[in-house]
Image (cartoon, rainbow, N blue to C red):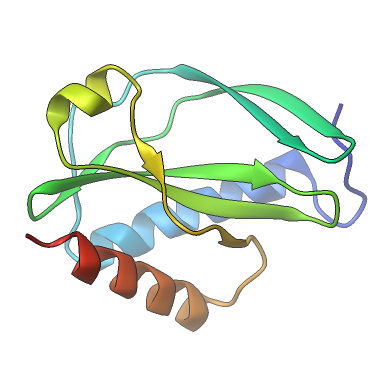
Length: 121
């Protein structure tokens, strides 16, 4: 059950779409590796099960996908990361540091730039 009054599931998905466009703007390239995967999001007293169909992106040698973490106060977005294609295919991507879903575009770009720069090897 969706636990928030200030944001709808649709608004959160639209924000994820926007983050994907920002990844592309920063040079990330969509791959054909994305596949639907179940996501269970938990926080204290929060539970939501969704089937995520997000695009997996490649930037440099690393892979990225937009995901979510539901905290009691509000939802956060998180970028999943992997260095190996095998990890992506086996849904073994690791979460980066989550950030609030309602950050502005410049703040999100700052988050993404830092992540992409650290992912370069």
